[in-house]
Length: 359
Image 1 (cartoon, helix red, strand yellow):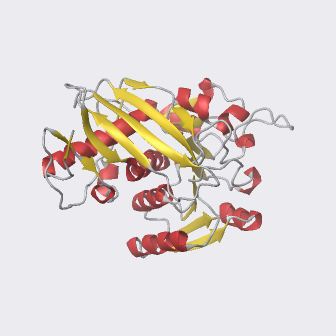
Image 2 (image 1 turned 120 degrees about the vertical axis):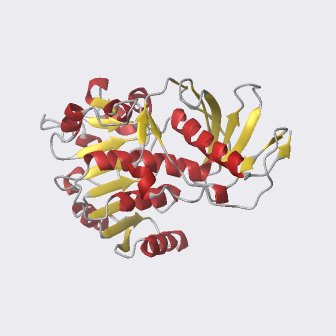
Image 3 (image 1 turned 180 degrees about the vertical axis):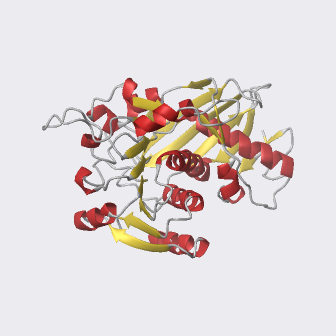
């Protein structure tokens, strides 16, 4: 699956790219979020993708993930990239989630560009979630609840608020009401004057109160324990779970999708929308704990005509909404990183953006 995204790049005074150099694309070049019209113009296209399962190395303060992948069919030709992300451990003295993507030159095999992937990861993941939300959520949704205060939380809030003008309340569930959380709330309020943005604590009672009102929930936290209880959600809610990506991580309670609960009752959510069936079965802690099988999963890319981008999976959409509650689980696949990185580099080269490093 690949969501073909039309992203805007802000003007930035950099030296023009040179064929003999490697242009590193920095955060200012990719900070502008995708506009509403671009979102509405998305085309979903099937690509043959060589997506290897991520591998990791351990250091004292980080778990470093390596994600190589290649798109082998596309209108623009093939593209290969390697994304490297250093996930900080609890005792890491330096904040942040450093990430870098190397885009390769298909003809020469050399590095074509070095891209700061932190912002791009937020954009590409939120792009997939926003598309899933547009397909499955109540179009008259009024309350959006987002867990987290980082880049993912920002892009999820912004894109969904762009697509759902009916939403007038944003509740940000955060561990701490610090500078980052307050800045996020102020930024969103400035962008969307119609929206009342509030900070909610992550204490159990406060979380339950926030979730009970939610029409759309986005969990953007790399959590090892479920962020809310199954009984807290209301009928008709749509959930995007994108923060956890290993078998030991959990964002939502597995009993939401499990068919082996103590009461032996059917799963609250019988079918789940995913970015990749194989990746989610291997890496999603919630799906593994619930003994999820592939026949209960629908890939986002399967819902679209690869030629026109029109929705084909009407029956699949009905299954995904079967009990009135829908869920999109995304662990992140390399093909998404390749697509958005190439898009940004193509535009940067056309506009003469980026710095050239002789190599």
